[in-house]
Length: 113
Length: 115
Image (cartoon, rainbow over all chains, first blue to last red; front, side, top):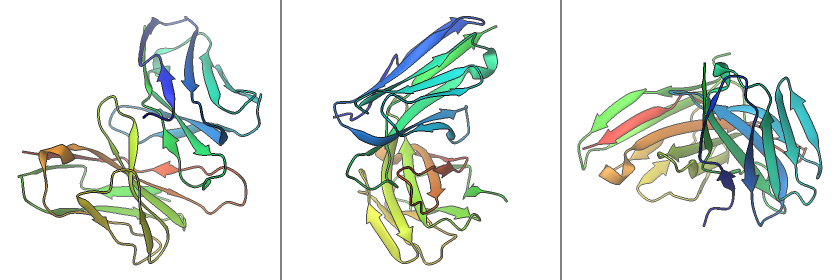
């Protein structure tokens, strides 16, 4: 059973388009993180959200944590080829250890020039 | 700061061979982790450690062993390699935090093929 479901699994778009990827669960998380992984490298943290309803922006990337802390979304405005990569969401379960993360399977994004 | 380093970067093993994947961090982090990543499957936790001398099983520990004799090093041992252990292995570390979340820093990975 996958605790964190990410959708879509694959996404191929043209440069300049907008996109949203989703991370959903039936469980409550005390925090949720988004990582980006480029080919041949390890994941790198983009953002952490901890409060229900929280919205964080990182340049053209907007992250939102659901009000009930069970889901999150990542929106990219005017995507660029440099945004290409695997986007992983990861959460620390509410009531669990904050140092153990559960990862989703990821969304593989390709932005074509 | 080198961050988290892993060696080797690539390795091919024959069935039944053993090997140790090395991981080191220079950030004085208490927590260290080993994950495996299979295509389309995200990251699965193999083992983790909350400090020197303390290790615990993660989600998929079978066929692996770990030790943590120092804060810096967290090697992963495969005793009898099987084709099912073909994967990319990532080591990560994080600092002990009083806040509710914990950022993990990852190494570049070891790509292992068992034939």
